[in-house]
Image (cartoon, rainbow, N blue to C red; front, side, top):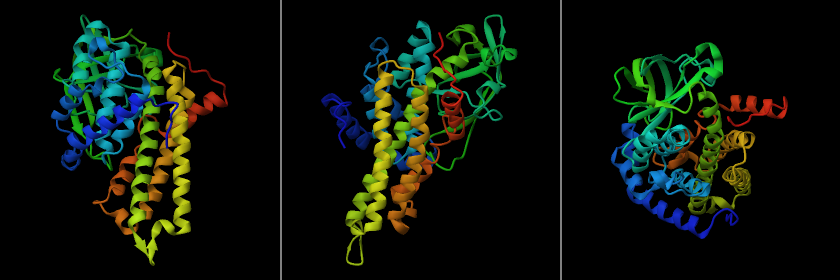
Length: 389
């Protein structure tokens, strides 16, 4: 399916070369990484050398400063390497951690952390969710208390992608606990600071991605590691949710498209009762529905990306993108697995892992329930979420 209005010849060339890169440098290691539960360090450098980690970031820090459809291409291709976990490690670094460095980091922080992140020398993680808080960001218990020229950080975070192997952590903490969401600040914290502990979590899917629970025990963070202004952290987090949700919406339509492509190929070769199974009407019709549902999400997601690129405030649409696309992907992959019969249930075939990896879609980055509540506030209560000034 071509979407000419969004992708130029350059985008297509970028897709081809990135796909080749993944085939050559990533795919041979996927099984190893899935088994060991983490990604080897060398691959970050490879990504950095090729410029991939700097796709959306300014040239001043070594980035490529490319438009949002290069990001879309990157995300789509990452969904086709048969490891949602590997994809997550990359995009959590690029679009969760690095987005904060780029948007809130002062010049010194950008020089030190953003440049190194683009080169693949420093890997980041974003620490917002807490064991007791879940989606309730305002209810966070982690505190950062000012003490002379440091903040003292105490508390815990969980479900943190790249939480074990990252070199720095972007941490949200309460600097003014009595002020509710007006009391949250964002810090960049070096991994080797005393008092940081990380425990690896064991997950249903995303096996190649290291996900951690993190504990902060009197961690002393220099005041210059505060990002943006004190107590404005909540609005910074909210500002980036639109991009994060679109990223997860794009991931979802891309893995569904991959599942459909793989399944149609399988059905073309698999025979039953004297003909290939793509000739049975019930199966044909189910696959056509899958393709239609995927295409509706994909086209909508592209339109949201185009408007984000123009600088429009897209919280409502990006929230819809994640809500609808992740639901669609789970359903499409479930249906595709059925087409393979017993083989669909086998680990040697990609759909078993794809089904497990996809199931995080409606949970991570804002559960579908929370997204519906946000949409209800926008659509029914006429609440206006506006960017922080």
